Length: 374
Image (cartoon, rainbow, N blue to C red; front, top):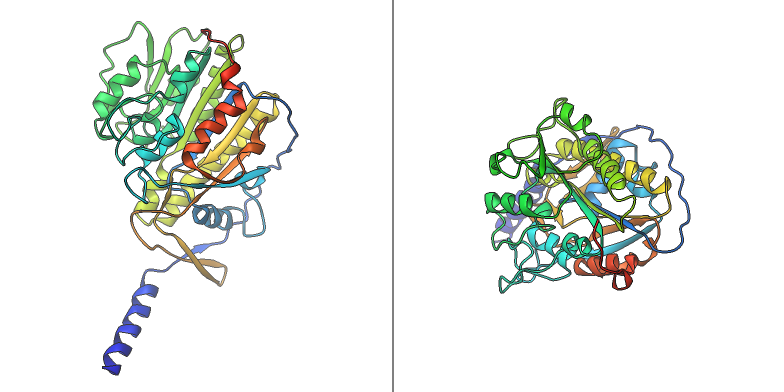
């Protein structure tokens, strides 16, 4: 019996070590960013999501990009907290239920998109803000019909109804949406009020007065990373420019931008791909910080829907980080919340993901904003 137990112990230790991976330390130098102090309430909200991004993904990316003693852009934000992530029907959330929590302030079941567990539609932040004179934008490196972006404009009881979700986006009040997903859209409709764009050249040619809704679809589903396709950074900078121009005489804007494929790489236990996706995500955060610094009316919030992969940082050896993945699925580990700009100080401590919705409304002083149109 003792020999059998010893064999099982040796086998378990061997199995745990068999899928370790070594990632080189990085030494990139990021441009330092000034951190300012702000007063009052914001009129604009930027919510940046790292899908599947736990504190462990941030830690590994930091080591692999700038080194363990340096800071990424996400590390430079002055306020931070922790978010719990469970859904209405599971301690392990999916992206649809998590994004519904931010978008509506309500828990729902996994795979439900901005509907209650009883399948009743729940008003989303963009829908609520539109009645107050705000415009909204959505950016994702997945299909723009994927679970996280969909929760901000769609209401369905199954996240994979992507053609129905696409139709709801076309009929929504979203002012600009940039991502992948041509497979799910009928782009022959709504041409009177939607400008469809399909490549980076067209994206760079968008000019005022931006009379129509802008719908950029840059790949059949998720955006494959290539020189011909836009990054999260480029799409976010474009959306910020257009929304700030369009709302100069309105109440403000809301922009959600997701680094979607950090999650996909973590599902695949592909650390190198995860770090590549995280680099784009962090550069996007850097651009958003610069946008906040260029004015005094914009609140930036960064968080994640859940951690994916159970990533473990085990040790170091000869200039490499030794890592191991624990699963190919989501985990229930709490995730970080990082913020900057007017109102950022309320996004600290431990909070539920639904709290982020209400904190955004509190930061805007939403209840005192009169109804209007933009």
